[in-house]
Length: 227
Image (cartoon, rainbow, N blue to C red; front, side, top):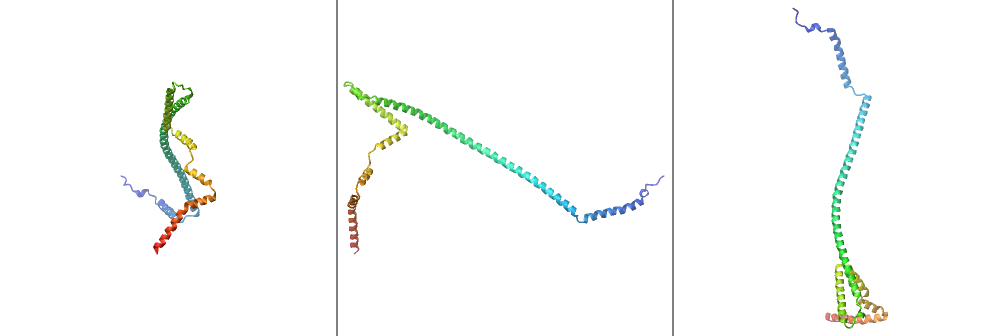
């Protein structure tokens, strides 16, 4: 029978002896290269790599900044759109309501003014139609009553129009102001303006001498009382 397997029978001692020094040399070379300082070329290469990485990071940062600015601008415009929309909806709705109310009021005022114009024209025509020369002896009282009635109706129409339209009061006040008589202030100014300087001095002395005498008497009385 064959003997048991012996590993030493298949191991070449010459190969082991030759490979061990080579392995030691490779290990020593690697440890030496790891411990030695980097050369200038290696440092330049590392610096170049770092600069490239920094440039890439800077480019990415610029892209992110532009993206952020675009997003902020989009958000601002979105907020502006929403705020402006709500604001204009409120203003337009309120404006429409106010204008509709004003239009309705203007229409009512226009209708009332048209009625007032019609009434004033009719009253004016009736008052202008009064002609005393055409009244006869027998119908004098009847015509007089009709004329007074027309004038009274015209006065009522006029007063009603004045209550509705204040512009009529303004026109009436202007007309009355232009024909109003001069007041006391105007009369006094006209009177004083017509006097000469000497006459004005005499008039002033005549008006002020009683006051001067009273002041002198009062001063003398105070001096006597102090003594």
